[in-house]
Image 1 (cartoon, rainbow, N blue to C red):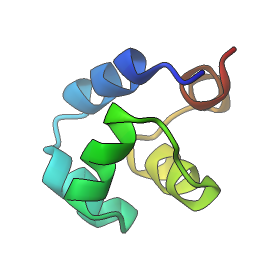
Image 2: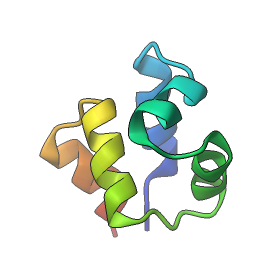
Image 3: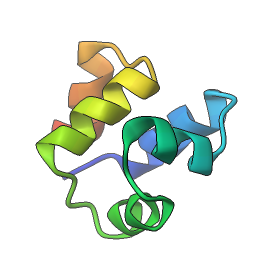
Image 4: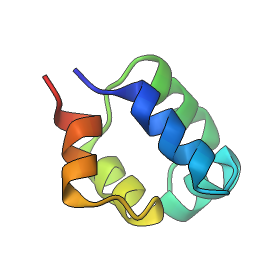
Length: 67
């Protein structure tokens, strides 16, 4: 189960818009919104968001790989 609430918090605290995050991550804005509604991120998307949001490994794991 993914922690979408924490992901949204990280996005808000990044100082970037969803549009700029999605562009930097190479994900369409619509796809990012859809993934947050029904969490089903691809490995490449997780990797890109980790880089764009400057997530630590532990943060990434809590957001995308928590049980």
